[in-house]
Image 1 (cartoon, rainbow, N blue to C red):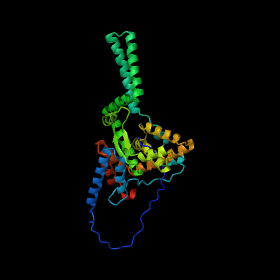
Image 2: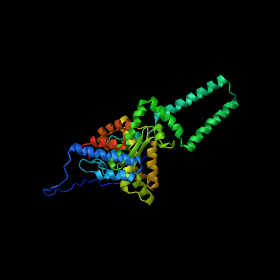
Image 3: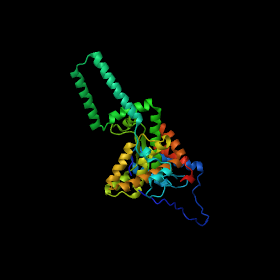
Image 4: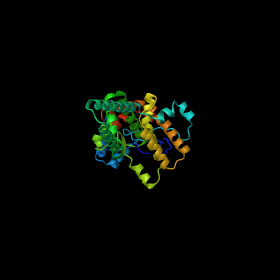
Length: 337
């Protein structure tokens, strides 16, 4: 999903200016006109993202960042101070790291076990019905093993994931809702910490239709060329690392807050772990980074629960990235940023 720094989040407001009467030919826009102007810019952002011009899209967003009637919430998250937090401090904030950072997808696991059982029963039934010889069964098993190996090597398990995910979305409303909430968490936290989401998919089938690739799973994509430039230069700033650490953990954090535990998001955690190891973090330093990110992300999600819920509704209907941003802006008060 996304990728991964630290801001001293002191909010500096411009000092009051002397009251000077200025005559301007520019007409003062009403609040409704400002809203229309913002939506037009977000529509343009969608257009640029659809063309693959991420730099222009990000530039449009930054031009409206923090301006009256503009994008007040982009990169405006009120974050906790960065320091080493103990597990007891996290527990005092109602966070059980074991339930949050050890996701096991019971839904898909159950579906996979049932499919294996059905295949076994079907094989036995076919053997009895058609009278397959042991040699024929051996060759059939070999063929299935070859297909499974081909999927694992060529598509990184994409075919199997596609089948399981499609069955999950079709027959489990809880799984379907969990995926939507998970991705809404990624999207919201990314926007609040200043990383522009460029799109999302909520199922492996949708990802296949959009990307024409079995190697790409459902998820939220971000405008991350600035991060990639830092990586290529060999230096990842603390601010960038903090942003993407929070984004990586936002999905599991959302599930934890809604259900008391997380099922999805193991890949996100593994990617963050690999990044920290690649940056040469010691175990203690990595633990500090993860604990701060968990606490910061959980508190942000709690503070903006209403915005996340509205965002999830919009994403479930397939709204564009620009429309989702507009919904975030409309559902967060000035006092919360």
